[in-house]
Amino acid sequence: QVQVVESGGGLVQPGGSLGISCAASGTIIMINDIAWYRQAPGKERELVARITRGGSTNYADPVKGRFTISRDNAKNTVFLQMNSLKPEDTAVYYCNAHILTYGTNWLFIWGQGTQVTVSS
Image (cartoon, rainbow, N blue to C red; front, top):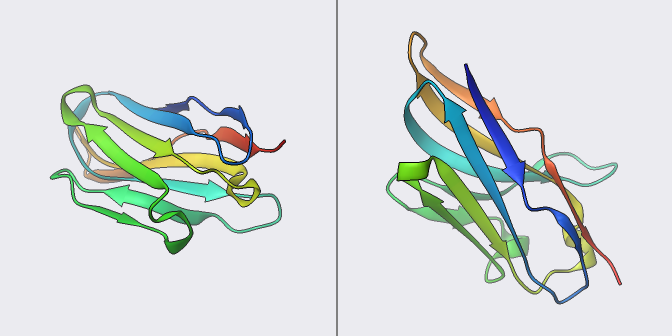
């Protein structure tokens, strides 16, 4: 069984910084792309950033230049460093990992989400 768990969310003032992380565990053979999504109240879930196994990244336009995604393949962990945070960044942030596990094909696994609130 494989699970993905996010951590590090919280309350931060506008203009502040926050880092969140996502760790995958279980019977993992390999992890391909890992992405961060977010969902604000009343809105659809949207892609924030994605990183390939090789480290190539892409970002949604609203977060370019402010957010940085990185990963540690040895620890099956991905990080999202968020700087210059704005109130509109407030959302539940979800991790989604493309994982190859023993006995199955590739699966997209979602975490349970972590709340990020940007408010004064």
